[in-house]
Amino acid sequence: MSDSPSDKPASHYLQTVAVQPELDIAPGFASFSPATHRGSTVVFRNLAELRAHGDGATTYWRYGLHATPTSEALCQHLALLEGARHTLLQPSGLAAISLVYFALLKSGDDVLVPHNVYGPNRDHGEWLARDFGVTVRYYDPMDAAAVPALIQPNTRLIWMESPGSVTMEVPDCGAIVAAARARGVLTAIDNTWSAGVYFRPFELGIDISVQALTKYQSGGSDVLMGAVLTCDDALHARLKRTRMLMGWGVSADDCHLVLRSLPSLPVRLAAHDRAAREVAEWLHQRPEVARVLHPALPDCPGHANWRREFTGASGLFAIVLRERYTRQQVDAFVEALQLFAIGWSWGGAHSLAVPYHVQGMRPAGTWPPAGWHDTGELVRLYIGLEDTRDLIADLRQAIEATLAA
Ligand SMILES: *Cc1c(COP(=O)(O)O)cnc(C)c1O
Image 1 (tube, rainbow, N blue to C red):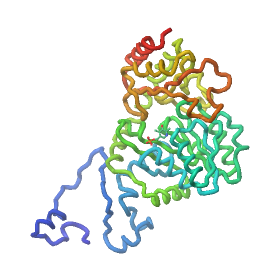
Image 2 (image 1 turned 30 degrees about the vertical axis):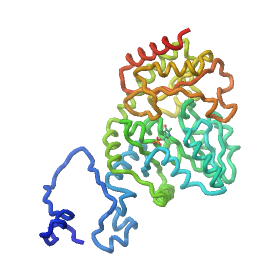
Image 3 (image 1 turned 60 degrees about the horizontal axis):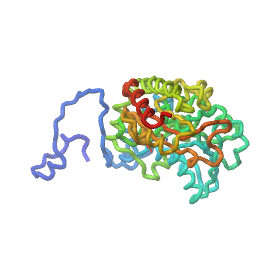
Image 4 (image 1 turned 60 degrees about the vertical axis):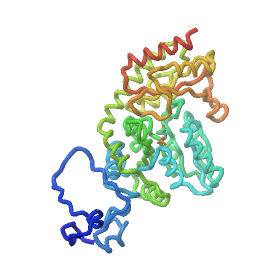
């Protein structure tokens, strides 16, 4: 195959012109938008290059599933933001979690998972336990001192999430990492809540960070993607090999959408942070609310850990209503909200609310925490980018219509 179109003999047959047209596009176009390189077939200049594919020295590109210049731009951009060396992109945040499990665990291995972990992560672990001979054990994320005694000779991985899903406890990640490192156990954190901006996993010595790019990095509520970030070359190579064997990849168009949103990521997070704290503080004053579980407020378990390990908070938190309200009343409260939509996937511009019955989601005896009184139903709130005066007015009208005594 020739290097450039001008080397080719011109064809007089329409079908060949349709496939291989000789185009004359002026060079020198420049814009801020990274180009979207779509491609399944990667074209090599000659057979030597094709046969050497994958050695990294002769040619970097080998197959559209593994990498394109567009996915590579997103990988490097994300690594710079979170302080990593390597990024692997996955078709969802859950697929990023799955990659970590399949790359690091085999039959006979053990993994420790916090009991407040993201629900589908727990389901994934239970599947591995049921069908793949891996043992999955839960630990109390607020009892880091108990972690060393839980580590067994076959423990390969400790998951962390900060704050935990739905109930928002902030663990002492530094202490958990120290326990893992002392025994040569790898650590992974689901760092989606901070988007890699407010919590710096690699500075704490965590080996792997998982991001659901679906949330803040996309920012548009319209892309599903995940990332696995590392600083260690050998660990990255292990993860990358598993990704290749599984046939996982992402679309260049989706990468383009995330790349478009990254320049505004820190300023969007700062706006979500400011607004969420304002709404959380307003809710804290309401007599209907027993607790506000927002890491930046002292009510939240692990608030001191948040102060030590984070530089900010994002837009997702929870409230616990007083015990006297029934599940039906709390459902009615959520449905009475007009500006908060009902939906799972946060990180975009729109505010969201979802009620949770936590007892059914956690190992027995872990909710409510010891010493808590008046613990009713939980509502998770995501504060988007609407004006907080409207959001607070909406919460007030819904509370007055459905909960006021
Ligand atoms: C949303 C989310 C995920 C999963 O992301 P998807 O792209 O929806 O699969 C993983 N972890 C956390 C903490 C999340 O909030």
